[in-house]
Image (cartoon, rainbow, N blue to C red; front, side, top):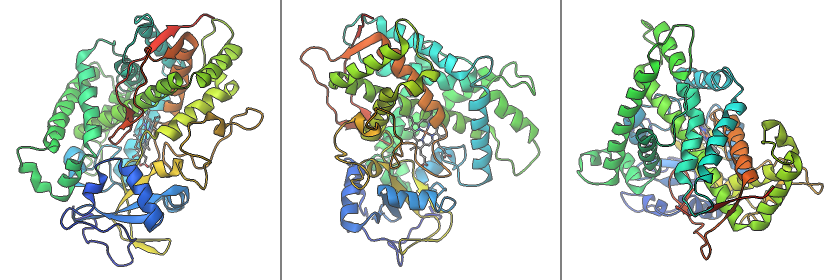
Length: 474
Ligand code: HEM
């Protein structure tokens, strides 16, 4: 915590809402913090600060402020804050939460090489994703058009793509141990931004209180790491040096080669953290996007009909979608982009920190300041989006129906620490979505309309809902 800016509003720091003694602004973050922050930016400006109970954080709102910091001052805004919770969870090692420096560079490089190499080992990755899509739609078919909650099925199918890269294998949809691990891991993604987590960051001594949601977080993390340790052991059996079969082998080879090098960032511990981070970062986000996409298709039958029309005209009858079809499906692309914009899967990004003292829009931001990137405020930025509160795929199409990229679209964030899995996620979303909609018509059980209010956490997901996937006549 010493590395965080502990002083309350240092000189020249951005202004912000008045804090309550001791706990600062923590209470204001209890419900929809991204919405609260956008509203505050209308009062205090695009760059403002919050007192999180003894340490200060800067909040960046709107496309201009986020681009200014994350892109134009890329090196400065690329650290992660040394929050007590993160220190306890991953000791600021691994990949996603690693401090900006050599350890992070090495881990990011290794993961990105694995995506490229193991993704296309034996077969191109899109072919492997398509194989999983078939398991997925067959499993949906088993419900025979009756209502079901798609959450587990989507999670299993999506996590199998990262499993292929990490372990070289997919897991069957009845693997309860793996499912349980994912379940408690995603519970932690939710707890990581709960009031208790903020309190723990401000007052780490509450670790010794026998109650509180932070205790649950610690228990879950211990179980997850234990599971990952076992699974890593199992999949590294039979490893042959210089012939890696998957990410685990590749990492262990690097670890062996760096034996005796005191400065090496590779360690068994960092392997567990990185595997966990890649699995959860890859699964939670893509799963939530697809679950929202299914929900909105059932909610707007006219949009779903246009998707069906495009699929039928591009694919004809019986031909499965492939990545090559993406260019010819601007409407599908527009729908998926609008889901990412409107649903804000990672509304506050992943907390950043500054690597050195800096000046932005006349404000002084000292080294080590925690920085929150309000990505939701970018997607609802009135300067760039007309009527942002309306779900409308058409905003991503020109008058000829061609897909158009939009600048203020940052679901994967920006700059040096932007999402490592963007390419993979885009492939998965396109192939899962098109394969599913080619075969099914999605509708809510008669007389029901699920809530559109998201469940809060680091990611936003729909509350559990039931849907009917009725086979289409083609
Ligand atoms: C980071 C979004 C899918 C791996 C991030 C960040 C966002 C994000 C907003 C924060 C970047 C920052 O610090 O500003 C998403 C969304 C996804 C998705 C919306 C799907 C729709 C994936 C997938 C993987 C992945 C499939 C890998 C399997 C990561 C990693 C980081 C990250 C490793 C941390 C990067 C670093 O610290 O250098 N993602 N992500 N993500 N994502 Fe994703």
